Figure 1 (cartoon, helix red, strand yellow):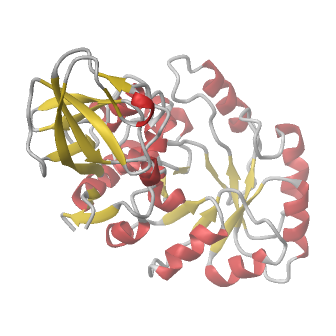
Figure 2 (tube, rainbow, N blue to C red; figure 1 turned 180 degrees about the vertical axis):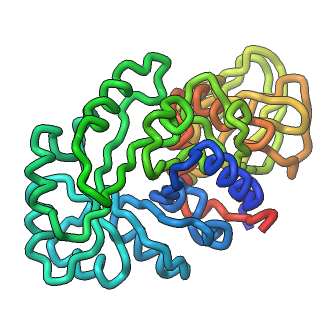
Amino acid sequence: MRPLWKEVDVAALRHNMRVLAAQAGAARVMTVVKADAYGHGVAALAGALGGAALFAVACMEEALTLRAQGLPQPVVLLEGVFAADELDVCAAEGFEPWLHDGRQLEWYRRAAAKPACWLKVDSGMHRLGFAPKDVPQAVAALQGLPCRGLATHFACADEADLSHAEMQWRAFDALPLPPGWQRTAANSAALFALPQARADWVRPGLALYGMSPFAGRTAADLGLRPVLSLFSEVLAVHFVRRGEGAGYGCGFVAAEDGHLATIALGYGDGFPRAIESGAVRVRIGGATFPLVGRVAMDMALVWLGREAVAPGSRVLVFGGGHPVEGVAAQAGTIPYTLTTMLSPRVHTVVTNG
């Protein structure tokens, strides 16, 4: 078996769920598992997720995957439905669509079977949702129908300057709420940075998997544990002379004599090709070494310099002891991309399950 695998730590997920529930206070937790649980694998985590009160995914296909894993809880569809007949599936399966525009609202009003739903408010993100001025009319159209409440999403709750997030919350908080309706607004960042926005339901995603939504802060700073660690192995080690090139286009040229390792890791595995040579570091044993040259489809090069490691040595690309937040910053991206882009050929090993 090709030596590239992700270890998914179920105990870490359970720990994070407890931390986030405590952080939420009186609010309940809507567990976000879109994009196959942020690349961690819903199938691998299904047992630990069984105690969740409510799930959230992007679309119908993801919700049906939860049902295939035997998870019976209600599932919120964050992008709503894409055709009127999907509402029949929602009603039958216990899926709760967000209604974000007049077309979806009309589909819902005409549906023979009406599932529970949420009205999405555009409080300042400007992607999906009813403008605050249009919310009263939309609320009136849903009177007497099984609407759970109002929802919104923050654009800048992970920024040091919270003025935009606070503006969004004020706009959302000012909306009249019909009796029995609830509200959800706080994502992972707002759960920690904007306590007034916890409302009735919080929606942690990234933090659930032990990744920090804040630049310059790790999961450990928030009391969280990384759920996913990505491992590879050294396939080969070569000694190269100063001035010798390696990899496609000789994208790496040795500045001195030293050792160069080849590891199983490429863009075919979902690892970014466009990283700058030498920017991203991986951990082998007790030291870190830079990825150099061009990331190929199946392999990458690691400059060891004067160190020498044996083929078969384990390589920690990111995860426990080598935080994904730091690796993402080195790669010029965010933690979300490094986990969600992992391809199916990366094997999954479940630990502490």
